[in-house]
Amino acid sequence: MIDDQADTLMPLGASKRGRFHGHSSSAPFPKKSTPKDPPPRNISAPSRRADEVMEQSPQGPADDDDLDAVATADSIVQAFDNAETETAESLCSQLLDRMRQQINKPSMKSFLATMLISKRRPLVFSIPVVQQQLVAIIRRDFCQTVAKRCPQLAVLACCLLGRALEHEAQWPLDLVEAFLEDSVGGRVWVDHPHTKEFVANILTAFPKIPLPEKVLDNSLGDDEVIEEDEVIDEVIDAPGDSSAPPSAPAAPAAPAKQRKSRFPVLEVLQQIQDFVVQYLGVHIRNYYNEAEQAKSLILTLQSFINVPGIRQIAAHQLQSANWIQNPTLCKSAKQLLHDLARHCTTNTEEDRTAVDSVLRIKWRASFVSLFTETLGLLVAANKQNMRECLSSASIMR
Image 1 (cartoon, helix red, strand yellow):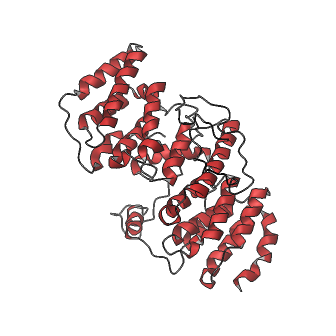
Image 2 (cartoon, rainbow, N blue to C red):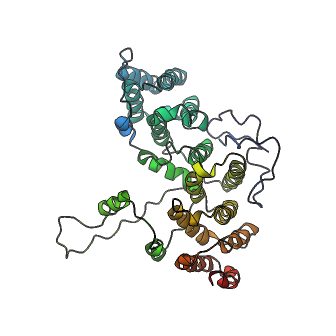
Image 3 (cartoon, one colour):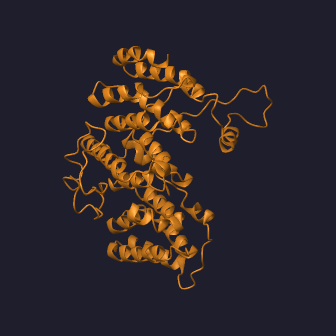
């Protein structure tokens, strides 16, 4: 069951027995209880672009005349170099508290001081108390309420944590829950371009199977609308030199960057996966709003799709919510369906239930291509899925 003291932030490497234990992923949703259970809380990359965070401030940074950014950074760095950890911790904590209090009118000097410290001594932000303050900034209680007024503070906290933890073998488990909270919530920082590397390192706990190029090429139906931003991205990301003649061969694509797992202990990974299944089950049952949060939920399920219990939840939602037939959610739902199909590689109860739910989706005649692609991915993922796929051939008739 969820820990009663779950709101307490844990230092790096800390673990509280019971936080992950006792959660079952054999069913898509936990059993109902009265009153409503709150979502489970608190399980306790690096970005190098902290100096760019303030560029997009909606109100513009305010000048804070009583703060000398350089002197503040020098004091903290000097204390850290002299092994005066308590002094460095106190000064840095005061600086972060100041930034949180100025959330309605962010101070450029406060941001500058933290960025100077990060560039000179990033390990200052790995001091347990300081790290807890940074994690608190990107957690739901602060991030989904106060930080929405200035998302740059949450983005900056991610950048500072990424630099501080760059060489750590085991990342804090609180980061997984912080990602989960923001992913199903307002997505204040999980989608921000400056946190892309930070998020990618968190998601090393949930490695995904790449989607075949053939499926990518054919995944859009005739009725799919291509957004203008997607066209711009395709032009920008097109291989080859724009100044080269048309006949010049395109340069070979660079190999994908391999990231080491930030959560290498298998027992810890299993605990994280059980927690994510239980968290999302409670969230969907008690807090999920279909009209406002469907897109966020689809993206969150995609992030954790390698977890068997999440595949079961995703398949149930695809069947019951008819996301594929929703024009607003159609594209995201198709991507989730492809991810789900190619990850059903086991004969566990979760995957068997997921395959059954996928085949029971109300398929329209216009989705024949998507239906056949899904069957192909299911069979390619696990030959045992062939019997169910063949028996469902009459669905599209």
